[in-house]
Length: 146
Image 1 (spheres, rainbow, N blue to C red):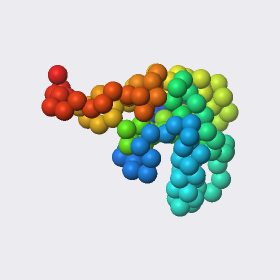
Image 2: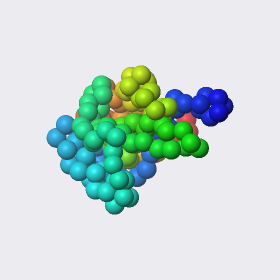
Image 3: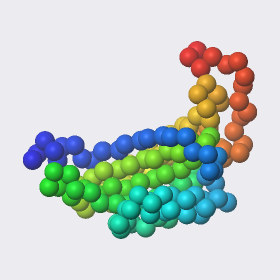
Image 4: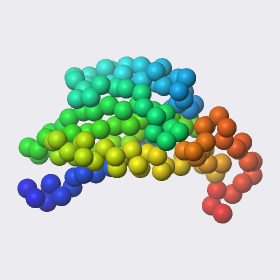
């Protein structure tokens, strides 16, 4: 049992293409929240442990919500931060043993706040310090591996 407990807390980051919003901002974060709520409803997520709400982390807007899961007879809490930058949806997920999310939430938010997103492979970075609409334009012919 201890070896399974040692796996928590964990932060998992995933990214995927997203065409419905190119960048989440203060102006469209509610629309993004509605889109994600619809997806969760489609996936038949019965009940959220923490309802979807807009949040600003640093200068990055997104949504935060919580779910619970059972992993080999252990209950874990899952806290999600989701945003879109450069037509990519990023999900930051904190997994902690039941009751541990509040203790580790600042670490999740620190990871979110310290992340730099890319617009597209090989293009200019989207910084967390500068709103997406003020980011540098993509440079053509730039070698992504240099």
